[in-house]
Image 1 (cartoon, rainbow, N blue to C red):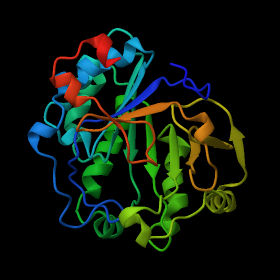
Image 2 (image 1 turned 180 degrees about the vertical axis):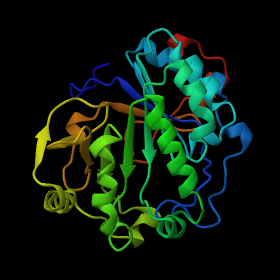
Image 3 (image 1 turned 90 degrees about the vertical axis):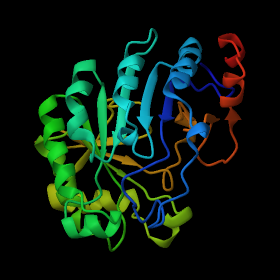
Length: 290
């Protein structure tokens, strides 16, 4: 699907729930946020119906997100059905890992194309302070299981000044042998994240180069998103950066976003979107939805 700027839009991020089992300080308050009413959230059968329209328009790659997607009890059966849908080339998932271990066998069996594991720290005390939960050991167990599963695995890390900045080389080193890539995502200073100070990608690159030697730009395509990658000599995996603040990549955007309540969003930087839930529940045909 080609948009008015000539960009090929072939990728949809689907949030299947607004709920999460962590309370990360840069994301939500300690008490959490008011959850959507059950009736306001798209049933997964409705999401699959919408995906039929999306694939007809040329969307062929899907990322399943939340909240934490695996807290939705029927997330894995949904992923299985989406993987089997005609026109779907790729389905991946982003998760914090707390529910990943028990889901892995079925995800592996259905041919999941990739896992992005959110992991901001390898220190239990920092994890507890940042997420307000004790879950690092469970997440690291899931990490080891995901590595053994053979499903392509990437680590997503949000560097934050005076929180995990001293750990970045240690986290990056997961890419030496274990994971396909470690990606550092610049903190967006919006909402609760505004109380923290992110670390520019250039500064992280310099820190990693001082620890491991030169980072060589690598143009190998490793996914559908805006990350750009670097190689370190002798490492199997890559180091990636998603740096929307210091390096704008809007001209390369290829994605749409579907929220858990059925809103189609064209850009996370804007609040407006298109309500798909209402016409879907009013019986709109596939052609009308398209």
